[in-house]
Image (cartoon, rainbow, N blue to C red; front, side):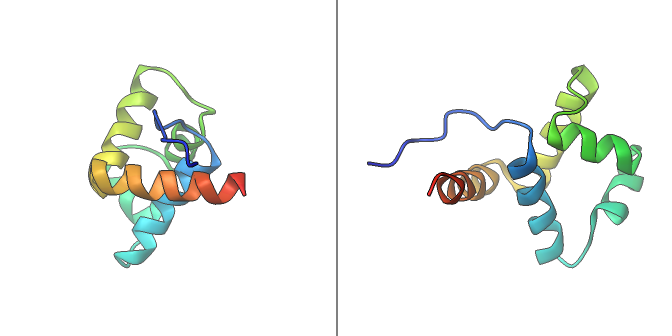
Length: 85
């Protein structure tokens, strides 16, 4: 029986899902963060959970919206299932 992912948590899986999406569309984190007004360090820290304040949560939401919430959730859930195998 597979478990449903209830929430998307910051961490390595979140970061990998976002980076994977950027690679698929032919870009990278460096090209993404500049127009969004954040530093690469803050972008990675927000995605991995090292930075977890209000601004970090808002940045993660931007990342999810960039991918599309349904798509991000599906990719995140697939990746989490692979991590548990």
